[in-house]
View 1 (cartoon, rainbow, N blue to C red):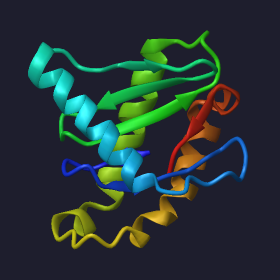
View 2: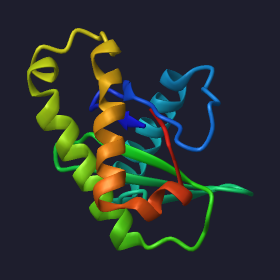
View 3: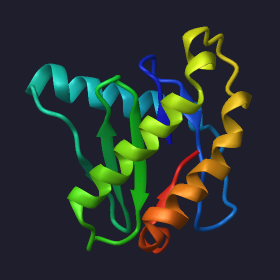
Length: 136
């Protein structure tokens, strides 16, 4: 899931199955608030949120956009996740630079990023497909 500075889910994609969240905007708002809270109150960035069967990895780009990855395997390499996340966010920001400058709340423009995400996964990080559920 890619979340902007206002807590809006711009992009959500599940690579493991066809399950779609009922309300990704509520989840994005929650993730944004928890990231901002930990930064403000603890002066630290939230990196992981652990549930019984999965882990959420949080990456905050210097632009203050967040990428949240749902990992279903605890044997993950943090450095690779950070590098992957940075690549995804930077590609997203570059691809949609014009839409983001004049963003009016319409997120349908960003659905086409699925293809770019698949290209990133295929060309650089094939092994992540088995480890991650990426939220669009």
